[in-house]
Amino acid sequence: MTNILIVDDHQMFVDGLSDILAQEQELRIAGICTTGKTIHRQLAEKQIDLVLLDLQIGSVNGLDICTFIKENHPDVSVLILSMFGEGSVITKAAQRGVDGYILKNSGKEELLRAIHMIRNGQEYFSREVSRIMLTSLRGNTSGNSPGSGFQPPRLSKREKQVLHLIANEHTTAEIADQLHISEKTVESHRSNLFVKLDVRNVAGLVRKAMEWNLLNGE
Image (cartoon, rainbow, N blue to C red; front, side, top):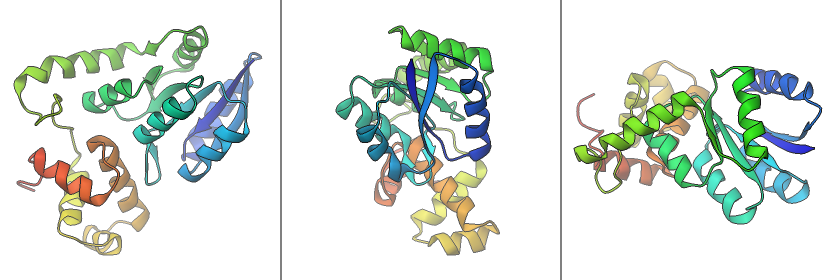
């Protein structure tokens, strides 16, 4: 029996994932975390073999969660289930020691294949994820990434707008008002930026954005 901890704050996705896993006799959902605050406690209190981890958990950087698990619970495997398809994010996750990475648009068969391979001591990076990672690594020689060896992360138009407003010291409420979006949506974009640029706070976000030259233009 493989005890699984689901870490994801999208309830509809969690419900669908739970339905899939419930059909597999050798898999058991030992816990579900919808916020970053409960992850450490569940890992400490429960017998967990595999974490299914989204990289965006509210304001928590999922890459930091990967590091925490691998440093403090080395026997626990980590499979990333994410919408992030950027080569820089995937490669950073691999460097943190994750055991697998698939995109959220993957089908049930690929998810179960990934879990099966990881349960048997292997890694699983989907074909699409492997292709993205290889493309990113090939781009290392372009010199686009100052010091890190990666191409600059791809930001959406809205993420760029939020980044510029953060850099100009606007509050979440002010950003929401200027962009005519909710504060929750602003926080979601902020979380995406933290993951894509691999930072923990606003100071790190602005510093990395300047290094990547992401504050020029819009």
